[in-house]
Amino acid sequence: MEKVVLVTGGSRGIGAAAAILAADAGYDVAVNYRSDGPAAERVVGQIEARGRRAIAIQADVGAPDQIPPLFEAVDAEFGRLDALVNNAGIVSPVSRLDVMEAARIERILRINVVGAMLCAREAVRRMSTRHGGRGGVIVNVSSAAARLGSPGEFVDYAASKGAIDSFTLGLAKEVADERIRVNAVRPGLIETEIHDSAGVPDRVERMAPGVPVKRAGTADEVAEALVWLISDRSSYVTGALLDVSGGR
Ligand code: NAP
Image 1 (cartoon, rainbow, N blue to C red):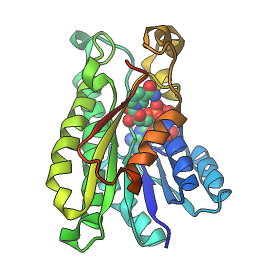
Image 2 (cartoon, rainbow, N blue to C red):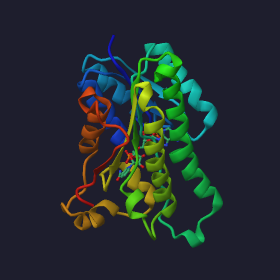
Image 3 (spheres, protein in one colour):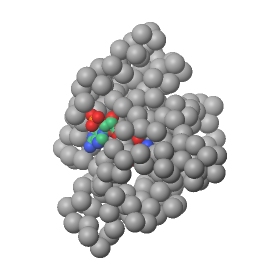
């Protein structure tokens, strides 16, 4: 049986790149998405074209009651789960804290933090030797924002990724003796559609010169790190926060 990875937010951007690269590395892939079914099906098609199995599963990770059914759909289709790429995440329009509404902050934390934690919980329940599992790997997608703080843009988003970093460090230790590795990748400025949500035209082009390597990264460059971390080639790496940020 092939190994199975679930990628949350796998229909576009970094998640889609990771799903396809994981297929290249020999994994069967569950592609979660929230709203863009056709995009998820295109990713599934690219995985199947590589001779691997894939399924698109709709679920909003910001809705706690939709997360167990997401994992049950993986159980039903593949009968195993070896890796979770905890990638689904959002930003909101650029804003200072002093004009932020509570609902915006709660939404960011619900999707980026609570959603990621509950997905990891479901993965641990399946992977942990404590629960009869055979082990596995969780990779959380954090952000360089966790270090930078994103002042004047979205301190709420940065704080959500700071939470992901702490969660990664703690969970890695909690399940280290249960054959589960937990790591995070912290992308910097990456060319994807997420920047459209920031409401600043040409945000990537305008910020790229400020990156030490003088360019934005690609989703494929982040996917390389994600797929390395789910693979056995990183077998002694756990509790690590890996910056993929062009030096930013
Ligand atoms: P993206 O291009 O906007 O893609 C986001 C993906 O997540 C889509 O597949 C989307 O599905 C899915 N998604 C969004 N909300 C969801 C929800 N509530 N439930 C399930 N799926 C959901 O974003 P990206 O740039 O690839 O970002 C992916 C991750 O990298 C995020 O965690 C982000 O914070 C992090 N990151 C990105 C950058 C960057 O510069 N791009 C930098 C640092 C960190 P639908 O299309 O179906 O809605």
